[in-house]
Length: 364
Ligand code: BGC
Ligand code: ZN
Image 1 (cartoon, rainbow, N blue to C red):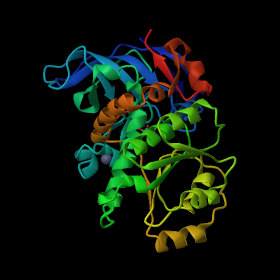
Image 2 (image 1 turned 60 degrees about the horizontal axis):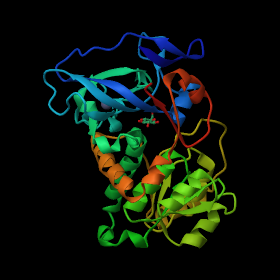
Image 3 (image 1 turned 30 degrees about the vertical axis):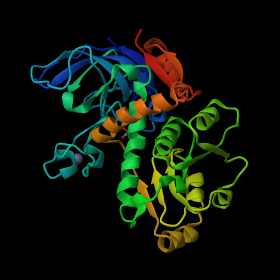
Image 4 (image 1 turned 60 degrees about the vertical axis):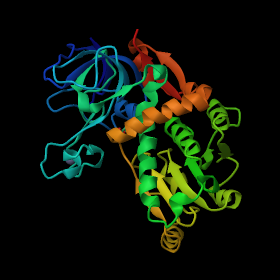
């Protein structure tokens, strides 16, 4: 079967032929990959600044956002049957007994760093034709969501962020009893992670503003309006304007991977505010930030800065529910996130170029 692989030592990205995987244990499931999304992480791996092949493999098959159809199950599989649609989680636990997160199914909080991530770190991914994995890493998806279910992995990032916001918010007396409509939330960035985060915030009833580059008539900005969020152009308004325009900003959900703009917005976060980082910047020269102002605010305004990576099973399951709701509320906006569909034969070029919101590889 075909797969798209990255060879770090020879700096090549190309289609390879590899044997089809087979079910080797009672709880394993075999899926035919129907769709695989391309994201910024894939582009970084394909430019050799991130990612690692499995031990003893010269190459890494990339891809970590996938929708598949179950075609075979081991004798001990209980929750999935052939014909079901399902998405795959990304991270697999480390082997260490003392890693309580990994031993508890929360490898997204692994403490040892010896986890693997399919398509990213130490394990082959999903830009291929068939995949086998344990049923515990596979989440069933209703058939009605087939055309957009490939978005569930990026949505799981927003779902985990929302989980973190809920946990942090519990420190505030009465917070959860207050109507979130009174709360201003800002999303930084209007790429897929930002727009899915904005959908989640709108659906959680926050008054949601997307702060990003881009023109008012761009497809990204049209999605912002279509879901009932508001767009603020970062080209027209510096971060200092945000506080003046919005008052107390209670949540900032960062989805740019750019440190400068993120820390500039952090300096206008409101009282009792929570700032969630999801982007992974490249490591370049140090930048200037207003550290004293930020530190004063952190203390005097009880602020929390929280990074979040990857997502647990519950975030995928919540994503399934929410994606269903998004498709009821604003189906055209959800569909508009997928701006190109290509085949595996053209995947290399799509990974090595950019453009559009989300490109998806579709089985021929
Ligand atoms: C993926 C996560 C992963 C992270 C870091 C992201 O693109 O969505 O699942 O944990 O990269 O490797
Ligand atoms: Zn671990």
